[in-house]
Image 1 (cartoon, rainbow, N blue to C red):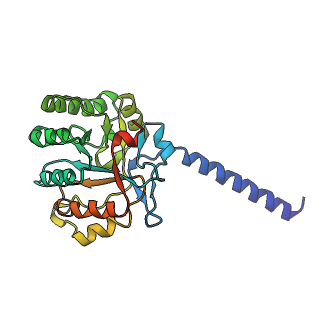
Image 2 (tube, rainbow, N blue to C red):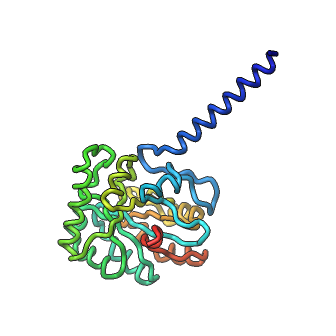
Length: 258
């Protein structure tokens, strides 16, 4: 066999091995913090895991990319005096959002939580104590973080908590996704967010719009923090701008085909 033929065979074997490795890693889920890679303005980003990978665990970060729809979500670890204004703005635009809340928020702000429910918003589970859930290897400990919040929500509102879960800090593992699904939950990541949670260094209006306008895309699951004074101030204009771009707003039930 000629040297050239040997080289070609070895090259072919190398390509085959590379393809096999790529297929393997594309079918597995990373453990860590949820992350996004934006490649093109106005187009959906690439997440740590693909839509189909997440779907088998009843999880999602993106909706139908063929339709100009936004699924608006808020995370809240505490109340910062901004939520009432945010709710007023959502009511003005007739937008139904989802609020992922932790235990101390529900315990200390029951009136606001009841208002969310009464005005047609979805309240989701952000866990009782906001831990790194990927470190909870024990199924009972994982379940307790979710179930304790369910019980508190029922106590404060008289209604069962909708079965939507957002991992604190977006930290997850494949086992977490399995456990959440076993408990009847749908895990909600996001395809659009920006650094809005630092109270001592809030973004300006211009900085916020520079992230939230060019990166919006069909099927977006948008994550904002309701603790952000900037978000409370710009939300009316932001929703107006998104509407002028042709977007409508959907619910998590719609996102998951409910």
